[in-house]
Image (cartoon, rainbow, N blue to C red; front, side, top):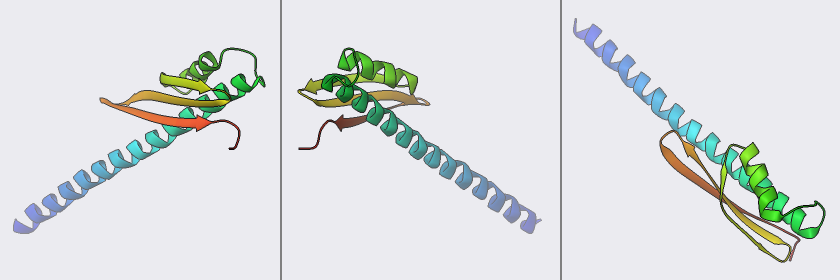
Length: 105
């Protein structure tokens, strides 16, 4: 019986470790997707500010962020440079990402 208890303990430990690592990996993927959404929203705002797209820069950024499953926390446009922060929830945890887009300096 001691071998069975040890085996059960090892299998349980491996299962807990696997679930923990999968949670961390899912969080990393979510963070990258949120960063991509922030990038796309900032690019949309900068394109609109430059006149390449018709509309209001922060409204266009909000539309792009919503299509990525995020909400705009802040949107600042200074000249042709747009800085956007988006947020979303990963389970019970809030997450945010920021991006800046515009012409090169």
